[in-house]
Amino acid sequence: MTDVPEKLLTLRNILKLAHMHFAIFYNDTTISTVEEGEKLVSNDISKLAPTLILETEAGFLAAVISGNARLSYKKIKQQLHLKNVFLASPEKVKQVTGAEVGQVSLINPSLLTIVDIHLLEKSEVFGGCGVSNYTLSIRPQDLVTINNARVFDFTKENLDICN
Image 1 (cartoon, helix red, strand yellow):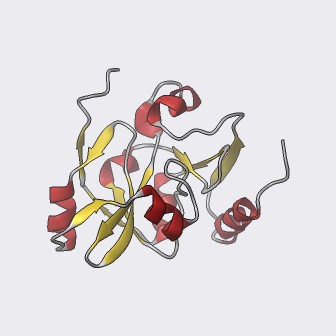
Image 2 (image 1 turned 90 degrees about the vertical axis):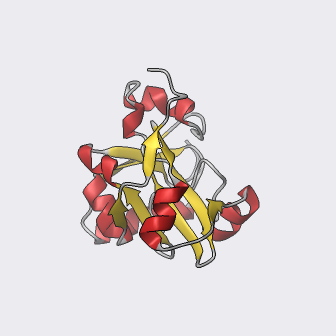
């Protein structure tokens, strides 16, 4: 394993200072997709929690969903009273978060964060740390607390995923 990236040390310190229950795992390869993360969660992809960066007329927001769900733009627009909501381009994701698509951290203090209510059914979820080759495990309620996130139902079942 190489030296721990500064960004990862900062994340760890933020979580420790807030007394969050978490673990950070080193992965031999970068996990950027649900398919790549399946082994990490013993094929229970509902424990995977990708962070998607959305662009709106009000600015950017981070949306944390379950690995077995898809965004419902309609629900997000209704709940947040927005007219335009779409996935940010990879270039804008990098600009806003400092991370590549698929590696965006679950913790984004500078962004409005929304967490899908279905994630709260899990005892822990796994997602990005903002750097390649590392995965964050955290309790969903701690994820909500540390991000001061809004929680509501903004997903729909992903019928494209076969169990």
